[in-house]
Length: 504
Image 1: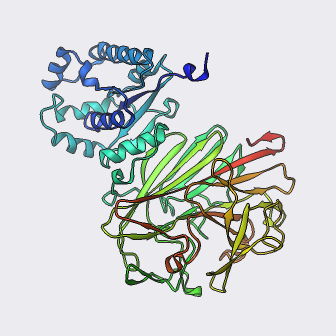
Image 2: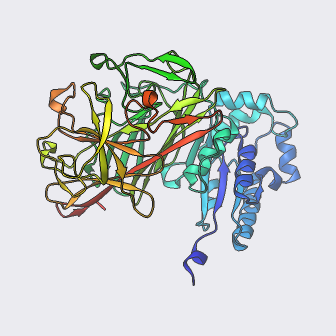
Image 3: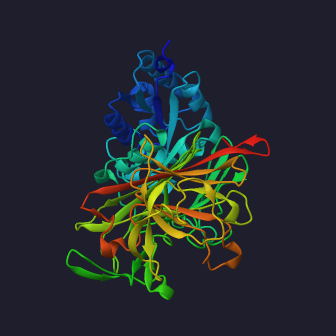
């Protein structure tokens, strides 16, 4: 039997309390995927409808034939090899078990909202047989899906199109929505806890990662108990850009001053000792949780017009653990009315467990590096061949200081360039792959960090869409037309063994 024929038919079960938007989101999913869909309300008997309309909640006996009818329809679609979407409140674990048991292709999509938000939505809804007065009974019955049910959880305090986009992406059924369908999030305020806010943990096999609310940064990543990142603890502040997302420019803008579309603009000088604006405007902004599953998380924020950058962007980041490591996607959409200059990067520090990076083996598949002046701004480009910057073949980093942008990246058949940091033994390490949108990579050995004890303890390998000073020089700069978007893809792939235990 061909492998494809043996795969179970995908069935998406959209669950949540009444008023969470199940029907609207299911229709959007079905339309995007071209799949049939049914709403659970269609399976209720006339007696059940009448009981709810009279203000009386259903009991388990009422719901048993209803769940059986939904399950029968799912079996019918699966039997015909038709992927499908169905909604069902499925408030209790036992109800979800009835819908998932024996159906290996079924996945839970849980629409999560606060009672206050859902109550307001129900109060504005007219012509539906479910009265708002029954909402309290729904929340009383609700047993939220647990990790062992492998749900994709999407927050519903965002427009339906954004809910559907997040669901499709985390379910692995389609790419995120086109730029025009991404939604603003300026009215949404996340909770805070500790110096970097909420901590969102991902797990997959022997891997774990943590993303934080502040800046949407990647705080931690390990594989089989072996740290991959030289990150920071949950009770520590972010320093030296560790794991931070750099939007709307990576690296530096000289003097913070640039000219765009006939206007002279001045950014705040966030690297005053060098008289530069550095690493964008979103590092210290709270990012909001949009959706999560056990092995993936999607966060986002709004970049509002401000002095030096009078443009409006919606920015999203998605982190996903797979059998092959950690995948990261950073996307931005120009939701304003004017063209906007744009660049993006991300700033993780890698470790292979050595006290200093000097003995670590580095491979950078780049033919050229950018020369810089004392302010860290590019002055030109030169081939690496025959210079101390030639890391096309793995060799120890040595005592030399690197704060170097490379370009002319050699890519594999999948379009990825792979930077490798390996243990001196050569038996284990991490590959940083650079995909769509990553045209440059910055390698930094941390010699100038403000914390002397952290210097040369890890290597920053930064995927970048453009080099430093792109706002002034235009080199590698992306110009986003209104409604247009940009995507940066990169990832981490641990490999090898440590003390006899396989990392991959």
